[in-house]
Length: 329
Image 1 (cartoon, rainbow, N blue to C red):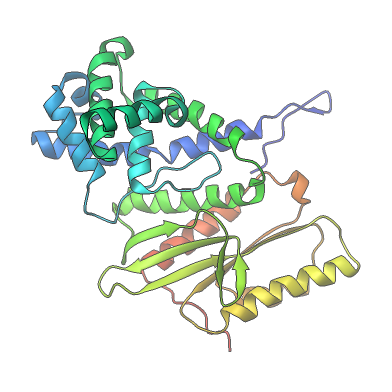
Image 2 (cartoon, rainbow, N blue to C red):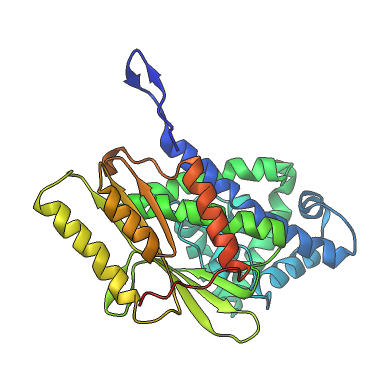
């Protein structure tokens, strides 16, 4: 996105805030999913805000257990400050912790560990006991658990998470765009189409003896078979010379590795100023999706609207089974 804001030729923009708000907005499907569990429990259309403000401790305990131990793999995600998806138990812990505590990992986790030892409870059972009790105790003080209120809390928590995670800037931009595409699909369809689950890698993955910056693991709903969307992210500061040759060779290596099978999708992200139009056209014929940003990596602020919409369309086609990976013979 073009987030520059100039005053007297000075850039005063806050692109980090825009990223954090976008990430926080992607937490709403998780909020809505928890709300549906509350409605199913009470056989009503009660809001999550209403449930959390009125439920007794046994009902709170029951809701948390249902959410923590949901057997469905087609669940919405919750993300950290650089767009990495938490595993489901950790997502549940952070979601409910954010309602009632700051710095849950640093301050609440040691308390839960002591409760677990004292009560001879499993870690998750101790989490559920503590979180239920905290919601019951402090809901009169907090007064609201509406999405509008929770969204502000999520923004604050994600800012702290982002500060603690270094060196993930380029991955964060791509993860954020992927999150938006996945969550838009989930909000429309309530699932991941033909796939029972979608898992985003928390770090680089290695496949075919090649390293990819991000991987989305897709599990077929009916057959249980899996495939990846493999995502190499290539950035280049300079505009020509030997470095440009190495840059192109690096991209070719990722493509050639993925050619070993037509099982996986290949989505390439390129951030480079004045890159070869011919090379770009050739790549478009070889990969399943390509996002090119004609700018220096130091000035890159993420996906603009056009590239985001193109990615949304690609992800939708993949999840609905409307496209298959290109044969790269």
